[in-house]
Length: 79
Image (cartoon, rainbow, N blue to C red; front, side, top):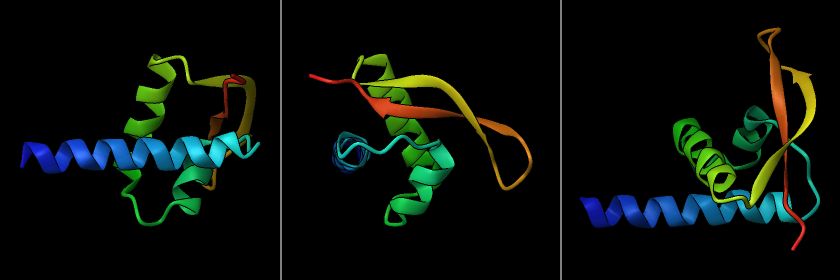
C-alpha cells in the first residue's frame, strides 16, 4: 500500500508540474479540472508538496472559485 501511495504522489506531482511548466497559471480547482485522473485531494497535496520544494509558487493573484471564494493562483518556478 505504501509503495502505491508513493507512485501516486510522484505521478500527481509530475502531472501538476507538467501543466504549470507549460506556462499555465492556475488555481488548485483549475488544476483539478485539467487533471481529472487525479483526485482533488491528490492534486491539492501535489501543489503543496511542489510549493514546499520551491518548484511552484503562488503568483499573488487570486481568482474566484465556483463557490464564490478567492483561490490562490500558482505557477511553476522558472529554472
